[in-house]
Length: 270
Length: 208
Image (tube, rainbow over all chains, first blue to last red; front, top):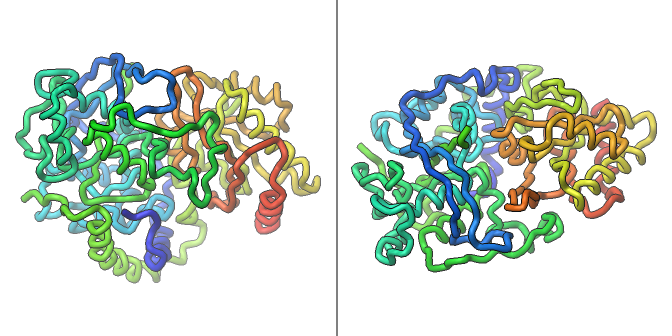
């Protein structure tokens, strides 16, 4: 997976980007129109035992009530966003947010083109663009634990994780064989589709998931850069789908893009 | 038609993606080259491309990009942090003090809270008073949903803990006048890193 822009390509991209309209002076996120095609589902909060052991003393953590997009952001929704905020087009995005693969599979800088399903999740978007999309919607990317909380549900149970067969199928998350990969797969009990789909999804806190991919112990690593930082472990290493997702996300840089990594937004309850 | 993601291991998939997509990007670069001379555009690597509104410790709203114009020392912290955060502030203060007097005022200092829900502008003003920091320091409160993006461009990692504390990277980031990150100093105590001080002085000299 990519960690840095290719050295040869980066200056070329920077040159393109330098001529884009100045972003900083442009209208702020509040000026953006809310996308009426986005459906939100309420996720009632509760106590939750994450498969991931964060730095807490207790394994069970409170998750506040929040809202989650019923489906991942689609190609069409992202194209509409680029119409509203063209500074995020692949040919205009500033170097600080750019990455070589960003929307590179689209036919043009504005449109996914006829080869792509407009209703399929948008992929090859980096964290910055996903974050900007959500902020424009008065929303944010979900925290990992919020994603995991919502994804613990199946069609009938808020927490189906005790069902070993259901959980085993999540080994295929992020592939076309994932349990929710088919477009007509049933929503979970909250009315949310595709959480165990063919696509991984960014979380807001991906860079703070202190898993195998974190920097401690590497070249610029130092345990002291985190106050109270401690080693991460899993409460339930047998929760394969979650563990696999966690390890993947924690290894990414914000500029990374993948062909099976999209996103959806969350909103805190007012 | 729905194009499904490629299935080979991620690394391979990405290599393919990079190979495929270098083409269009490079072509765009070439065609745009002639027009690239435009003068006062913000540098592509500038963190000020991020659109984020903030409020300072005096209650004055400003845009993140308003920091453009002189080198800045930037960090992220929160008020209710009693171990590392005072060290961040003291370290930055000491660093500024070690600058020759003529250079001191030319370095902007901005401390951004990770916890806008609790750190109101008034709370920021109190931190400024308690630490007797210079009057021109900015203590900035971002909008709630902008914190992650600011932390990302500054490469600050943080996680809220259940007890209300925040694990976070304790770092001073040096930005040039255009907002390009030049250097960073992990804060481990109140004494500034001499090498980082030298980088700050070089940035101030370059901004002449």
